[in-house]
Image: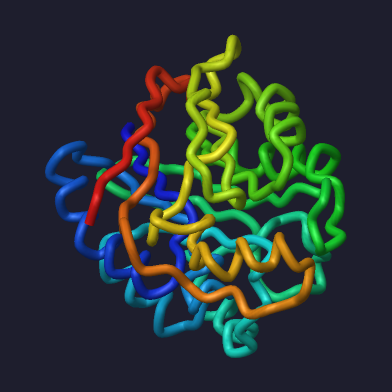
Length: 259
């Protein structure tokens, strides 16, 4: 089984890049499943039903989210009609939506879990280290192949989560910090891991925002609008190969593709 995972899609330039580049990536890698993080799709803040369907039409199988999940209010009721859009599973169960899904494609099944870290995050969620076991047990009834998007701030929390899940899931891929890390590896138990996949959008920027406004904010310490950038658009992601019988990953490859 081959999985293509794309990092946080940021605003219009990221959406357009994903739509343009996915056909080329399908031709190059022939993935069985395409998963991406869509929590910054709507102008950098959340996602709307229309934009979610735009990505599904672009051959995306599952969209994961993160701390901006509730930014666009119209998404609240949309979860009930679209199970392929998932939010972090460690939000309270009273929240709309679900934190995981098993998808079918090319005669194969992939479990996808969305989790969110707790360290330095603005939203206080439940502990994913303690809550993940029942979810894994339920998914393992259908498939051994499981990918987790761990949306978190610190490298230490991401690395710890990868090791905690090593041998129990196929891949733990980090999102949220928008900077692709060069630590992709197969952990000893057979789990593919990378601290951060990067992002899809304008890379001539500070993590997708216009450089000048960010620099001014650091200089003045005053609140100001962080404008979206537009230059150097590219798509960041990883391609992961998984042994379907065991659920263990065999390879993980970082990719960066200009629009």
